[in-house]
Image 1 (cartoon, rainbow, N blue to C red):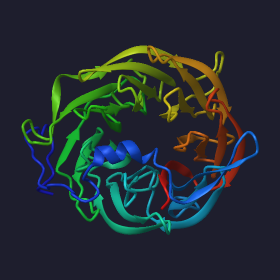
Image 2 (image 1 turned 60 degrees about the horizontal axis):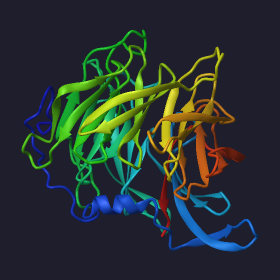
Image 3 (image 1 turned 90 degrees about the vertical axis):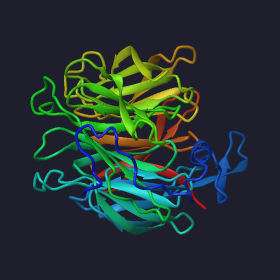
Amino acid sequence: MSNVVHASPWGARSRSSGARGWLAGFLFAWTLGAATASAQDAPTAQAGGSIQPGPIYDLLIGTYTHGTSRGIDVYRFDSATGQVSPVSSVQTVNPSYLVVTPDARYVYAVNELPGDTGPASERGGISAFAFDPRAGQLTFLDRVSSEGNDPCYLAFSPDGRYLLTANYSVAADPGGSFAVFPLQEDGHVGAAVLVVHHEGGGPVKGRQDNAHVHSTVFTPDGHYLFTQDLGNDKLYEYRYTNDGSRGLLSPVPEGYVQMPAGSGPRHLVFAPNGRDAYLTSELAGTVTTLRYADGKLAPLQVLPLAARGFAGKIGAGAIHLSPDGKFLYATNRGDANEIVIFAVDAQDGSLKLVGRQSTLGRTPREFAIDPTGRWLIVGNQDSDSAYVFRRDPVTGLLADPTRLSIGSPVDFKFTPSS
């Protein structure tokens, strides 16, 4: 592990030039990928009863494998009807978070270990797969250590040369970390070239005894990385300079954005305008609106996910914007088990509650909105089910759920089917 740098490795440089195949034109492909219609079309029903073509997508679902699931399931998703049809599956341990390259040639998954059953010293992993969209088939390529425990998030660098993971914890060196891995031309993942450990904790016993990195999110301009730490209530900020002028990632002078004590920041998303950002704080059960400018994030608004007077357990989870950026959705777990729906003010990015939708099961960890914006699928981790909801693009509300039986579903990614 001589190519792994620990403890403030700000002068480290990558030992890989990165992939030059699918990575060429990465940012352009990333922008167009979600909006590109598939060459394989399905009929789309219109209000007047006429039938128009609509895209078919591959839907990849990551799961926890301590029960009936084997790993990653691949489905075909008909955006005209919301119908989901099984295609294939591949075995891999606890692939609880997935990312797909813009050209859909490769899929990467965390192996969230040790999980609830393994030894505390067991390191997690990152598994790479080649993907054939036409056949809907995944082929295992390789697996590397995540250099920490319980990896729970993945993100591509803006230029597509690296893959980053958030390690929720690190045994024997308490505290979360994030790690950076070079991507090879053939889709394989190289050993980590950078590992950064966080320190400290917060006031919530049992959840904030140590640092816990939960997500790694690059800014829309591609110049900065924010890493959300549930354990010490900080959004750490790093400058990304892949030319080696400052090292690959270097801390900014202010270091981090301090969130309220005990709030437990989890996931961060940026709006299409590149100005507004939204954060779920798991322990507080809130959504925070932030303003981004020149490498800085400033909190502007905090809203609770729980309904007024709700007395049960709460737990903010996933957060996503509709494709048009007009609505924001977040899961509230605990005893609520719902998706909370907010309208986004086009002028200042502020949020207004417009509705709630039960997920019809327990522990909705993640969800996804299809690229057409007409459907939302959410998984109930502890009910072995997922539901596809029809989404109203005008009101943002959800209706007409269809149930899928899936063992411990926890992540969903759409990609165009060839």
